[in-house]
Length: 78
Image 1 (cartoon, rainbow, N blue to C red):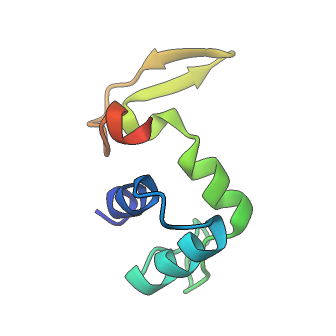
Image 2: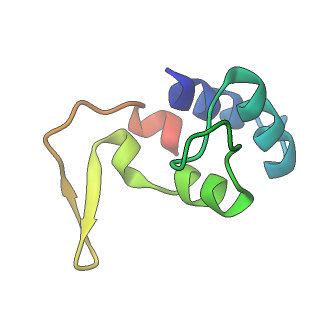
C-alpha cells in the first residue's frame, strides 16, 4: 500500500524527487535496509522506473511478465 500511494502521489506531478522522499518518510516507507532509514534518492529513482511494480521484470535486457500480483497499474506507472 505504501508503494502504491507513493506512485499515486508522484503521478499528480506536484512533487520533486526530494519532496517525494519526504512524503515517503512521513507515510512510513523505508529503504530495503529497514531500521527506520529513509529511502535514498537513488532508490527513489530506481523504484519509480522499475516495471516490476506493474507486473513485468527485466531478464537479460528483455521485459517479461512475472507471476506476482502487480502493485500498481501500467497506466499509473506511465
